[in-house]
Length: 345
Ligand SMILES: Cc1cc2nc3c(=O)[nH]c(=O)nc-3n(C[C@H](O)[C@H](O)[C@H](O)COP(=O)(O)OP(=O)(O)OC[C@H]3O[C@@H](n4cnc5c(N)ncnc54)[C@H](O)[C@@H]3O)c2cc1C
Image: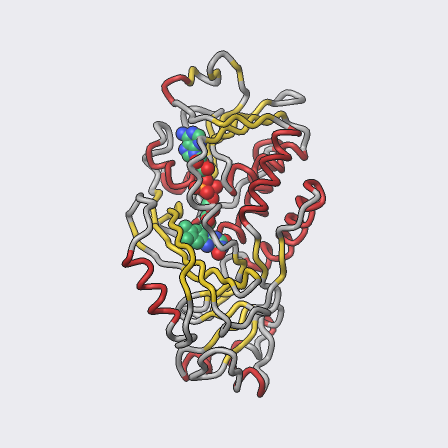
């Protein structure tokens, strides 16, 4: 690879932005193209939760992802002179005796110590929301303020690379030239729209729609994020984001009454007090059947690459996976087996 390879990245969501930031850090030349139809990275609550509550297990590779993401987001905050990464306490309200017992067991384990506080009498009797079976608190949770993050990074990339606001048309790509400009590599970070990609469209990328509500309430705590059947993320001034729904194999981004009612129904397990819905949003997650991202190089086009399929936990996964991807592109390091698209080829 030449000294200053020129990369064309399609898609300025979390994936494209994370990859672009690592490439620019390594002095590569980057052009980022986006059609302005972002529906996932922007809609996302940006919550970073090291545990999978449903099974009370640790998330995949979480011991590697968690320390790195702190460094990553803090570094981007410094570069952009903005603030979008916020540690937050997540409180899980237990759904059953079994879940409580499982938490009490796991909290004694050394490998969970970094992520769980031991349940205290205050947690057992927590009364800021409905409490049937007690609660437990997470360590190391955080959230990314997604609009601030995306805007700040797009601005930074336009100053340190090239940001083009237009739709990429695959029929205009000749080898690695696009509209008369020659690139060394093309990287596709198209999110759920990647199903239509002519070179990578055969990969098993799914479209999983999600909706969120923004609500106003004086009855919900503002100092932590409470979770049971749904998450509540405090936004300040008695406003909260609540979500999400999961509807598989759906690529529409319209908000629905059904989505709203599902979230309100889930929220009723945390509060019966009056709340006001002030906004509703929908997006589509790029998910993969084996719950691992789709990263790698086309078998017949060595200069075409994909970084997609971040699924439901993109803000947790993207920092380290995009670094590993750029180390693979620039330094020839191996990709992690579980993310490499070779597994489907
Ligand atoms: C309701 C909801 C809540 C979520 N909550 C969380 C959460 O709390 N925590 C978390 O970690 N994750 C969450 N996620 C998941 C997270 O949003 C995704 O994992 C992540 O944002 C995917 O990013 P992406 O860049 O791959 O895709 P996208 O955000 O979809 O970005 C792809 C970009 O490519 C552009 N594009 C596509 N095709 C073209 C083309 N031909 N030409 C030009 N541009 C193109 C699109 O316009 C878009 O801007 C949530 C998702 C949803 C929907």
